Image (cartoon, rainbow, N blue to C red; front, top):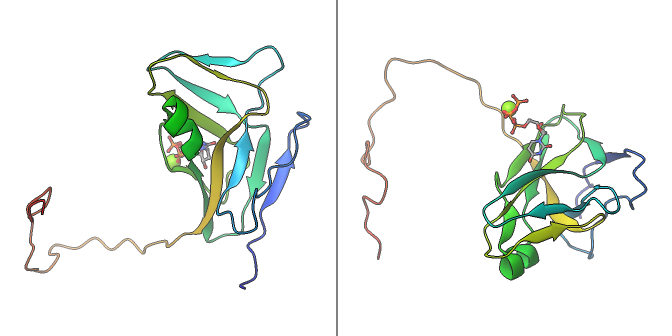
Length: 151
Ligand SMILES: O=c1ccn([C@H]2C[C@H](O)[C@@H](COP(=O)(O)OP(=O)(O)OP(=O)(O)O)O2)c(=O)[nH]1
Ligand SMILES: [Mg+2]
């Protein structure tokens, strides 16, 4: 097994457990809703909300964390992450927030401590930006957006 990337997590004193992998080979660490007791966020159908998680992280340079939906919430309630995958930059030190959207047909309550999304650490390739006058020819050229058909 490769050496794990060090993911430093700062809990903002909200009294929730530190996010953890839920199985031995889970790819994502579940993020919890750090809303106050009795102040659940109510998501009406079609509505979105920026939900606090109570945690901030520090990743080594060369990595990002992606905020991804949980399949259970999507399948059972139509609730997903609007900007999936959300990008947490290695130099971001603010609180991680999750932009949830309710695409279901019923209102959904986001309760304190509910596991609402998952964080996946991924390597980042940074490009050297090279302005040019000519990109060079390819067989595809500018064809796209279904140009090869569907079957
Ligand atoms: O789902 C998300 C996405 C982003 N962020 C935080 C971490 C990230 O490093 C920062 C900026 O995110 P992004 O670059 O996607 O947003 P932006 O609209 O481009 O904001 P900025 O101008 O601050 O980069 O916001 C979250 O907490 N949750
Ligand atoms: Mg940005």
